[in-house]
Image 1 (cartoon, protein in one colour):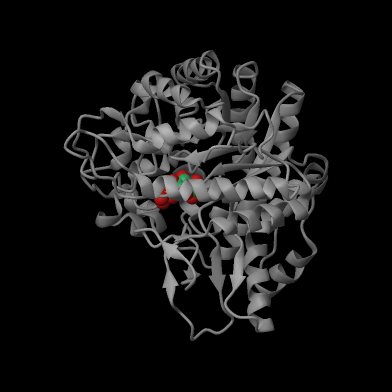
Image 2: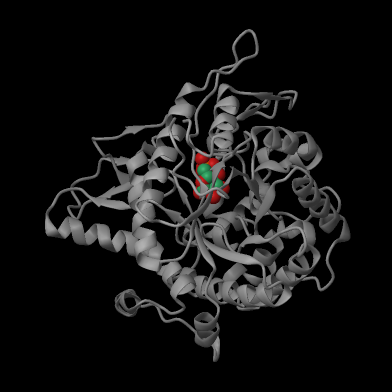
Length: 476
Ligand code: BG6
């Protein structure tokens, strides 16, 4: 019999985010979230993401997030299916605009709070530990319109007010918190990451890094506040990770890869070590970035580092110092060269299970704090057979190999709290706005145009994952 490589209390589960699954975009007093003003990729999603103020003025007709998979009204049925798979944890996010529709109110919206009461209580009743992201691409749109988003220091106060409310309200039902989803994404999709429109900014990098500073301070203050409200809280950061490989062994390529990785580690260096990394000084100087740091900020960062480090991993990346080499492929927003040793998904995301082991070892070597793999998965088109079954062997293969390598990383000595696959139930893709880019064990009958019954059904991978969990990762 194969023995498990995973700790006995390993938190197996799945992940979603409010903005991609809840729908009910204007129900019970909710304000607008960034996704609510975006069409899908075939109708100008990326142009809108990069020019959100203009997008707000437009009428795209159909908005994938407005109904999405209507998790808001289906959550009981969905959680029951997740519990049937044996989930020990369920990761979701709170939609900020459900609690504070404009982001800057002093009093919260009770109907929004009540929804998450019910949701988290249901998780607990079913034996699943909620893992809650406080801000997953979800700064209320009104905070962009009225304050310019996270470039405005006032956002720290609004965010902390929001944190105080949700920490107090859910202190007995939620133990695991993530302050910002993929905090490094603010550099790549500033509207999702920071409610920012940098399209008209003279120096966008300055604005992005200043906003990042505000988020880093907010994250540290939230960590402090959370620990005061409940000392048992485990509060983590979240990185869009994926080791960068050099295209060749040319020292210039190796250096380029190191720099590429530092772009993301920069954030975690601050959140996990408590101070700006030494290399950031030169980077800021050479890019004419001058951070406004208020008195006390550096102490706050120093004194309130995270309890654990969570990250998403979809693929490794490849880079070259030679600008003539440009065999670009798609990836989780980050441009990467095509790695000839890897296959890719239909969306061009390269598949590299060993890269997960490498990434886990690198992060753990760097910080020596527990890790949590909170996103990993394959976006693929599924076919519903005439008997209603969905044979998603490709997804099983992807996940099996990644779980195997995660097990190896644990044997390497990496401390890892758990694993939540991305999009455990099909949902709207963040990058493309499509439904057809499916990640789930649970199929949802809804297409890219919003047609379908919203009925849920189990894919082949449902039983496979159930088996993985019941054997604590021994039977893959
Ligand atoms: C991560 C995000 O970047 O990747 C998720 O945290 C997102 O919100 C996921 O959905 C997969 O990306 P996509 O574009 O396939 O939805």
